Structure formats: structure tokens, C-alpha cells
Image 1 (cartoon, rainbow, N blue to C red):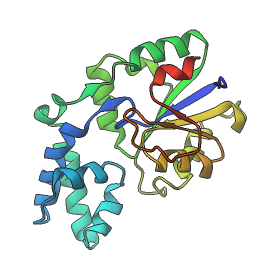
Image 2: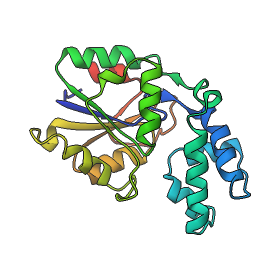
Image 3: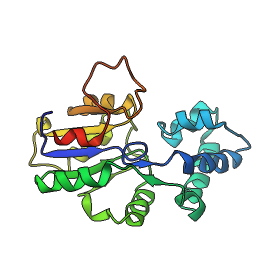
Length: 207
């Protein structure tokens, strides 16, 4: 696989298995606007911004604001945080990329405070040069805006030196829209028909 100078990573589902923790978070968030969701729905919602989730749920601006506030409060609750797991291939991959003098960063639709809390919990906060998280002033994924925000922090690198790695189909599309290479992480064969660059383990980035 081509080696890049900068590796941008999605957070949920790519570096960390956060799904179990988010079931309760979405329950609390939607309860704040008198709604509920199933676990299957939550698996889909993980790939949406909260604004998009609110729109899909038919909420007005006030309802979306209540949803966001409730989720932001619940997501760092110790009960939720305790359910988050780091994927087994993450630490070795990060260490190896650092040994090659690669720059490593996170581009996610999650909020920066929460990402920082999780990184500190697993003691890898110093492995990342920066975090681009949810920002109401930007269009969320699959818009290229989050990638362009990251590229603004990488002024010495050309687009072909940068890749974005994520676990859903919107992630390589986000990369394309942001003008960089996209790599789909398919841990369990979820996207057999995807024809783009695809890996089953983060360790494949090293070969």
C-alpha cells in the first residue's frame, strides 16, 4: 500500500469501538425530545451528525438543540465511558506510523472534548497532532469541509501526501470531497461491493 506522510483517522468505529456506549447515549438524547430508538437505528445514527439525526427525526431547531445538549452531557458519563473499547490494532499501528515520522490526526463528527477524554483514558492523547471534531460552522461528513479543516493544519503537505481512514462509506466519500485519498476500513466484510481502496485491519496501512 502507498505510504502517506499524514494519516487522518475517523474516531468512532475506526480507532474505538464505541457502539455499546452510544446505545445509552442515544436513548438519553432522544428521551430529551420524547423519542426512542432501537439498537439497529443507533448503529446507523453513529454515522450522522446530531444535526442530521435531529432532522431525520423531524425535530425543529429547538428540539435539535435539546438533543445535542442531552447527548453532550450523556456521552462523557462514566457508565458510558466504561463501555468504550480500543480496537486491538490501534496502538501498534500508531506506534509504527510514528516510527516512520508520519503525522497522525483525528477527523470526526464527534465532539472534541469527548474524543480528548477517551484518548486520555487510554493514554494515547499524545499520539495525535490535532483533532478536527464537530463544528456547527462547518458542513459535516460526507462534505469535504472536515478534511479541508484538517488540511489547513497541514500547510506543508500536498493533497497526495494525505489519506483519511474510516469505517463507513461516507468516510472515503468525505476524503474524495476533501481532495485526499480515502481508505475504507472494513473489519467484518460489511461492504463487499465497494471498489475503492479497502483494508480489514489498520495494520495493513503499514505494509
